[in-house]
Structure formats: structure tokens, C-alpha cells
Picture (cartoon, one colour):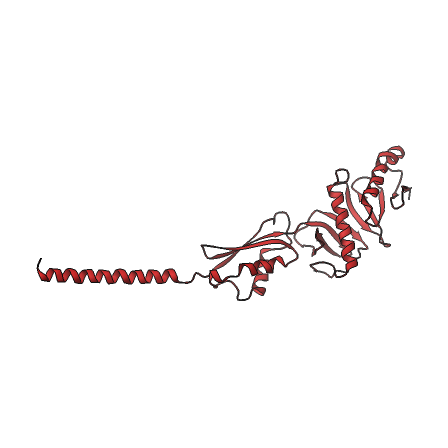
Length: 262
């Protein structure tokens, strides 16, 4: 092969090699370019059942409390553990999970706490969950749970979230939650008691779904004994005397059921 052709081939090969190396360099540089977060996707898993927290509120929590933010931040620099700590500290949230995906999206999945009872105190209302946390009522959503009204001994401001301030209030709230759970998990009383009213002296009055009777329960203690007496009233006294014989049935006294017509 003539030298001129070998020279041309060498030059061509060298140029191609330079192009390949240059392309590889830029491809490598592109692959090394930091991947940054471009969006936030929020899922509230039980939103069809409860709406105590919204995606908008979750976004606000992160915008306000996550130092350094997340939009435009390098994906591997986002503190997922901190995100979960922020959200799990909110009284309406039972559990949260944060993770990233290949499409540069930060994902947050939240499960809410489940309400057990609704308190109505004058024109103010709030829910309580099993652990004794309180939440304000929602304008666009009502959870169908037991209602407790009357002289509710909880000093809660409008919009309050969290546990009551005093130990006495916490103990009372825990006893009410325990009572409501007892009713809702008992085959005899499940769905039959629709409302609990706190009387001025602090005693409880139970209102059944059917009948005109109002049951004076006293304090939310000795649940089994008092509900057994209520059952005895229905099986014996009401059956013998008739449905409209008595207006109030007092369960507060040991080994007694006191019935009154007025």
C-alpha cells in the first residue's frame, strides 16, 4: 500500500478515535451530572375513609420544616428519614413513608389515624383517636363515629390538635375512648348506643338508637357490670313493663336498677 494511503488512513483513524473519545467524555459527564428532584407526589392511603389531613397540608409541613427544601435538590441528598420524622410528629398521621423514584420525584405515602369518637361542646367539635389525640372537625367531611356532647370536661380551643394539656383531662378522655371501644366491639351493644351526653355533674347519660329510655351511667368505670344491668333491663324489666313504661334507667347503684317514669 502506498505511504500516502497509509498516512490518510492513520489520520482518518486518529480523527475517529478523537471523536469517539470526545463523545465518551461528554456522555460520561452527562451521566455524572447530579439528578435533582423535580416534583413531589403525595398519597394518603385511607383518604376514602378519613380526611383529617390533606396533601396540601403535607406539602406545607415539608415546605416549612424541611431544611434546604426538596425541589431542585440532588436526589441522593434528600433526607428521607427527616421527612418521615416531620410527618410522623403530626398528630393526625399514624405512619409515613418517603422514597424517591427514577423519574426524579420525591414520593410521600401517609396513613392517617382512625377516629374513635366525636366530641361536641357547644358550637365547637373535635374528634379523638385511640391514643387520645384530638383533631378539629372538618368542614367538608364527617366521620360516622359515636358522639359525646353536653358538659364535656376538655378545655380545647377551636382548631386544636394533640393531647389535652392536663393529666386529669387525659385520663377522662382515655376512659371515654375505652368505653366507646367497649360498645363498638360488643355484639350486644354495637350500633345500639348512638350518643353519650355528659351531664352537668359529670355523669354520663347513654342514648339508645330505639326507645325513649335514657340510661344514667355515671362515670365511665365498671363498664361490664353496668352494661350487664342494662342488658338485664331489656331482658326482664322492659319486657314485663312495656317499651314506654320508663323514661330514665339509673345504673349507678350497686346491684340495683332504678327506673323512673319521668
